[in-house]
Image (cartoon, rainbow, N blue to C red; front, side, top):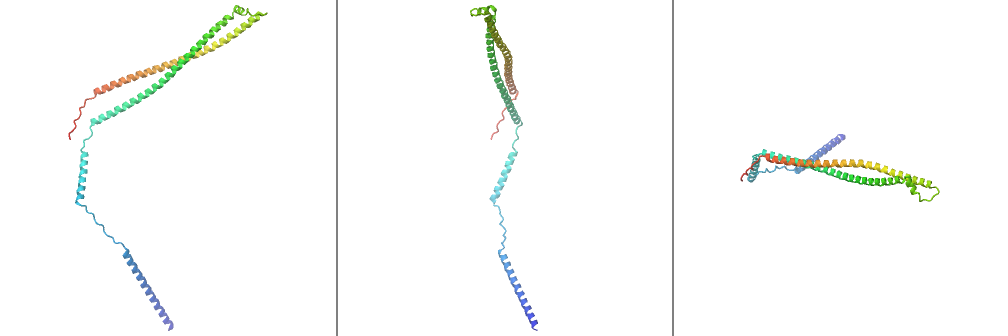
Length: 256
């Protein structure tokens, strides 16, 4: 009997505990719902903008102005074909003039180079001629000396030259004089041979230099003549183009 009552009391206490816990959980849940409802933002619809009568009038005016501008642009007359042709001819003429100017500058540059080469060739030719004159003068001097030596080598002249020398062996003195003159003659003849070779080289160099100078002069003369002929042809072409070009009367300017 005692055990049964104890079990009954324990069951009742457990039931009371469960009921109290359930009520506590339910009250907490209700508090949370209230807090969530209080903190949730309220959504409101924004006010709809309605344009005024002035705005509608301005919008209509802008639209009409835009359409008028488009119509005005669309009604503009197209470009004149004759004007386009004249523009093309003018541009073509400018291109031709620039090409001619460039070609003229190139020709002038080549002419300047040829002039520089001609000047150097003339200077070289003058220098070679001066060297040739020096060689010829030395040759003339040595040739005169060689003739004097040949004259002195004659036996009577050797004997006359050694007659005033006192010696017991006059033939030895004459032989010594002859050998001295022969040695000098060989030396002078060697110098003459060297000068002759130099003169031959100078003659070849002078001929080549004068040929180059003559070629450059002819080239420059031909370039000058070609430039003159080209200028004449250009003048004639411009005159003929101006003569053949039809006269176009100016278009009247429309009034306002």
